[in-house]
Length: 104
Image (cartoon, rainbow, N blue to C red; front, side, top):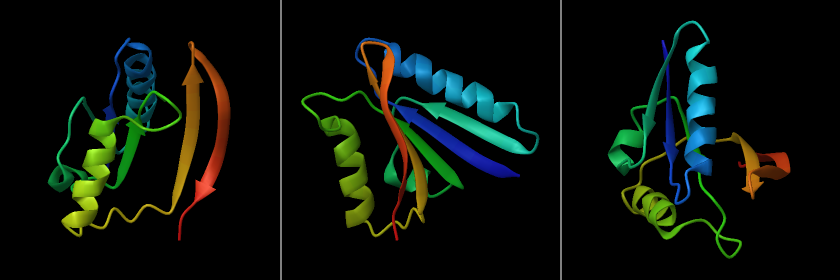
């Protein structure tokens, strides 16, 4: 069984709604276990096969809480094994940018 964690940070609730929709869609796939959290520790991230992070953009950067999560994950040498991801940028409730990114 594959395990997916959806983590979101949402000040207004819009990003949370998108995270809930992503989690609901993932749960519809047979053999997938989905977790939905507002906060996760670096150690929790390594328990999942995939991690989806939903964040609003403030001043064209990620929120400090999510940035701190990624920094702590790197400091603790936790390998997320992320190679391919999906980016959706939500502004005023509308997806403005989307695209695939590849990290080697």
